Length: 326
Figure 1 (cartoon, helix red, strand yellow):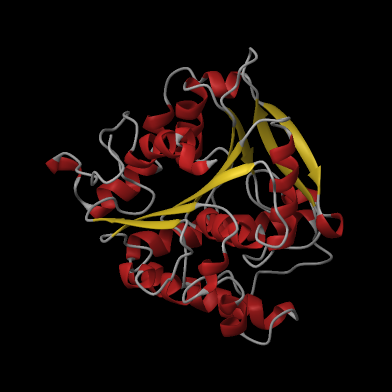
Figure 2: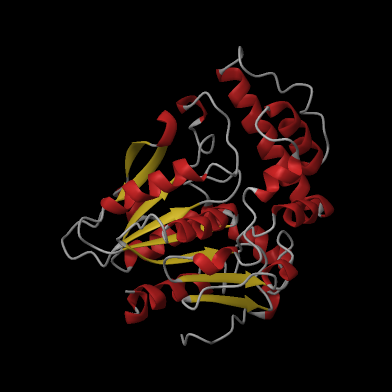
């Protein structure tokens, strides 16, 4: 597939919610997955004594083409469908794979007393840096989805002052670039609002059950929008003055991405129901950055078929193999 070819799904897969829902459908994970068979748990000690969990899948023989580090979205995990499907695809093409869980994602709530904030870049950067070392002397590539894409973009910028030498390219698929607008978009969609509230409430209940002396989320679990729940938790956090300050802590619009220290590619869709396309038009990139906006794709979608590879997976192979990425 050529670098400039647009994503053109079959007519029956052009719905924004069709793409979005299928990207997380467990039907896409059916069948054998050699990446999972080769996977082993890795616990990483990061900034401030925080422990994060990852899963490393080395190639069975020497001659790996490199290491792909994958970052999931908000309330997803290293076992999210799009992570498993992408990992399987890259592993089949000769890449080692490392799948990271953010704090309080997956089954990791017990690892740290503190709760997850989207602004916690230090610990994720540290984990990615350690994961990159697993490649030995080989190249590493970072790919993030949705909130994971936001983390990937911020890591690319931090690499300008704190290089992760083995990382050759960063890709962000449907990344959050303006959390204020993304939160509003999610709340305006009944489907997305119910989906994220259900998963977030479940996560908060799990954290409270593990640390009952520290947390009582009962008063806020009845709130019916992502914004109101965010406001309530930030108000009681003692960390941020208000939600606006919190959101600004991981906004990457304007000139933010001009300081990226590694080549990066952003993949977005005009019909993304979670990330307004206008947000992507308000970013400026470094000369080695590229923004690709497709007409279709939904959120984390870009599917050609229920079980088929995606546009961004094929694009990953193109970029990772390219001399321009090294």
